[in-house]
Image (tube, rainbow, N blue to C red; front, side, top):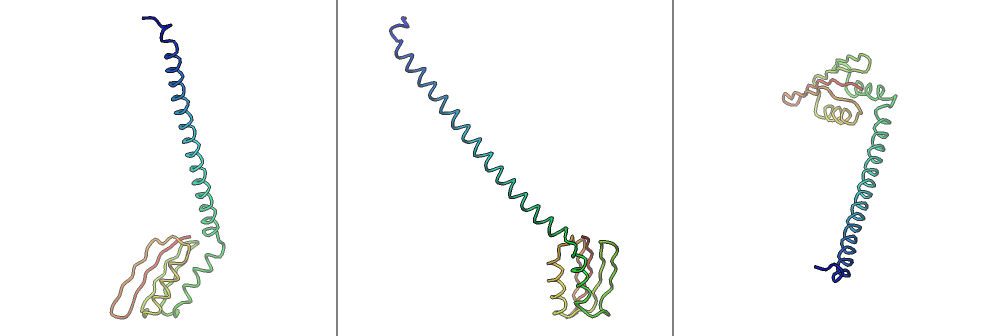
Length: 133
């Protein structure tokens, strides 16, 4: 077998092989660049979310907002115990309107609810609420 006779075909074959390798390398690099770009965008969005949550949870007025729960119903229906940044409240004898107002206000507070127990007897509601912030 003479290599000189197939010299041109070998050169074309090697060039074609080199072309396939270069194309594959380029595709891999573009794919890696797209992945890095999307990872960067995801990280940036997560950072924005963390900053927004930090502003909400770090608010100095949370205590005042929690204290407003005490004024939603008459003082005779409330047993209130706040110690530092922990609250234990018990609401007895609530009608439907008071109950709805109270639950809506609780759910809109930026606090960690540890316990929320609701009991319904007829048209009267009892609520036990524990949270921290």
